[in-house]
Amino acid sequence: MLRGDGLEIGSMLRRIHSAGKLAAVHLDLVDGLSSDISGVRWLVRSGADAIISSHSQAVRAVKAEGVTAIQRVLCLSELSVEHGMTAVSRSQPDIVELLPGVILPQVADLVLPGLAVPLLAGGFIRSAKDVEAVLEAGALAVTTTDAALWNL
Amino acid sequence: MPRVFFSVRDRLPRPPDEGQGLLFHDLSLTELIHLSANAERPVAVDVDSVEGLASDSAALTFLAERLGIRMVITRRPALTLRAVELGCLPLLRIHCLDSTGLERALDGHPGTPVGTAISPGLILPHLAERQRRMLPEPVLAYGLMRREEEFEAAWEAGAASVVKSSAGDPAGSGPGRRNHRADPGRRPSKPEHVLDKPDERHYKPA
Image 1 (cartoon, one colour):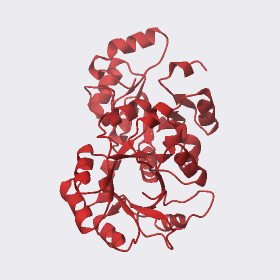
Image 2 (cartoon, chains in turn blue, yellow):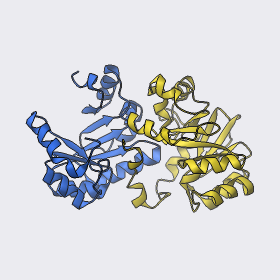
Image 3 (cartoon, helix red, strand yellow):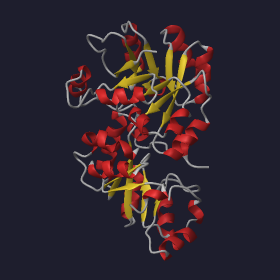
Image 4 (tube, chains in turn cyan, blue):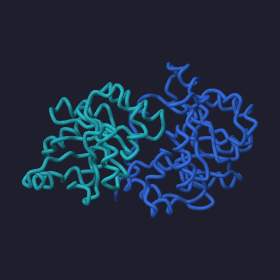
């Protein structure tokens, strides 16, 4: 869940759970919550199974709360990849999500060495061919809002 | 606008290739002044990444009038308009991480004569045709561009210009690669806590 009201997210999470699915919530992108330990605790209390953030501090708080921590690495330049990977090694999330995911095959050499946890890739993945290339390059799974790709 | 800008963080490429511009980014103000004085070719500056320089009107005036910079890149739409007044070509830098974020960022784009610096440059060929048509020209593919085929793909996808990464081609030995490796202990150009908190809120869906 990358949008919505973080303070009123409980009923949505209950619907997702009753459909037999797990829910990851992006702490930095939902409204109403700050990316700190109290924001994390609120989402855990609301029933989030995993929490996504780009902030090392929030990721550490998520781990301390015992739910799955997903840290985003934003690939804008060599420098941003470098700093993202440094942040990951500091906070040791359970999963890393790389954005924009479709470029993973081209930046895998910068990201994969030194990465000890599963990798998700999301962003501009538009076709089954993209999905295949990204998985081939080393991602465990892709994240996409394109429902046509959900049942590949 | 040159078809190729060489990314410069610490030293000028020697010898510089003919027909290339230089893009200064992630360096300090004193380094920028020193390096741009010796550049002898078209120079662009990523204003937001120069340590010691605010992203504001006074900084732009200094770049344009004192350093003679004619092309600037920034994430601030208001600053691009100021650059136009100063006779510069401004490119609004768009962080291109997912479709929702791209469309939201473009909502704030002033449009021509302000061009677009799309980051990472690698993403340009992966955009839908409809998304590429939304980018005000000229378009600069900026970030993580290392391989010849990646430059070709960006030009093919409509980039007027590409930024060659200072890291060079991972398969070859680009001129900048050696420089990059020679200085592994280089400090981050911004305080770490800033880099550690990439701001995603700007592209939050409405």
